[in-house]
Image 1 (cartoon, rainbow, N blue to C red):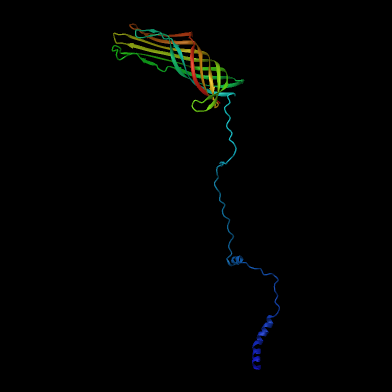
Image 2 (spheres, rainbow, N blue to C red):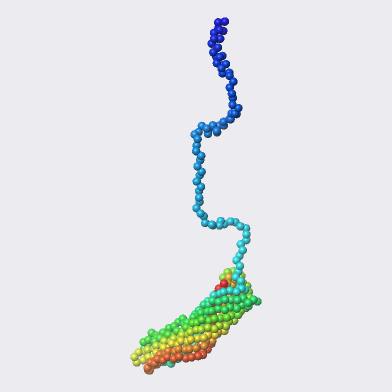
Length: 318
């Protein structure tokens, strides 16, 4: 037993000497040990990555300044109606008819011509201004140009049953045109009426008025007559051309119907008093069995009867 103890002593003695060397005091840093989290550990283990580049800014193309419709609870305000009791400019057009007397004069075998009225149809176009005077009174000043003429200018006299007539015809034409300046005075009042095209009621301004105008005009009248029944039969011709220089004064009246939108319709009649300051006449006459003659004449201050005109039209006030 003593022998076993000695063996253990000699074996363990070097270890004791080594432990004595290690047992010397070791300086310990006072720096606290930081705990490393799992996420930091992963970052430490991964290679150092460069800082992420900023994403490029997306620039959208310019957009037109378009207002986006939005819901609103505001009640829309209706536009103001046309107010007829204010001053306005206006344009006007119309259709009219008159009878102008042409100085035809010829006595023939087939037909005889005497001074007669020619039915003339045409139109009128004008522009002017309207002034509201108050208390329903209104006055207008306008300038108009007009033209009226014949619609049917040729009548054939020869018939297929008359074998002796080789050729015969008469052709009459006429026209009057000019420019007028007109002044009117009227009184307007409002009337409620039913629309004839739609089942609704509307308001119209009714304006009866009187007018007076002066102007300058021209009139032309022509007649071409020929009758021939062969070498031994009746042969006659009559051609006449008349040109009148006119000074016109007119007096009349009418009525306007104006809607709330500014459109209006008128009906009127007036009397033209034409003064023919100069009349030029050229004629060619060949009576049956006689020779042909040509003449030219000029007349001054010719008086003609007053001419009545009827007109229908409309326009727009603004």
